[in-house]
Length: 212
Image (cartoon, rainbow, N blue to C red):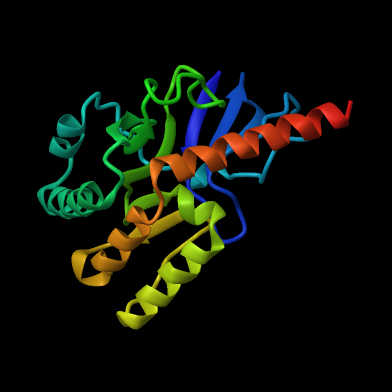
């Protein structure tokens, strides 16, 4: 089985596209995936291969940053520091799916990410792409109040916002409202995110049972 991380577009979701022997079997949407073993009826949006993100095979954050061009590395380090200073400290920084990702550690939530239980549940990812840096904000994905705050904050700063359903794309420090980003990152505690995550899973299982 092959797994590709894909970028979202205005009308598409963000997450994973899975294929087996070249045949699409489903797409996994952040933060909660929905998988069907069907080529004819793939779960979630249809995601195009031309939108595949750049991914790194680096095993550590330090290695990942070192692989980047100097100017992009400096920008990534600035964003990483803003996130680290703002995020609930119980989230753990790691490399996941080829990006710097802050996750719920297994000692807090042993079941792990339901799409892949061996992995921790992701909350926020920071990845260097070809033309921009992508910041995947899972809380913005499901909390429209936070999305509104993000949009209003960018507008107040006089900056152009490039935001999909969960993916904020930024290109340079001067075009990034860092205080607004810090506010959004820090707005959701680990407990609040985990409660939402578990609640959505429970609703999904209940709906699946009712449909049988």
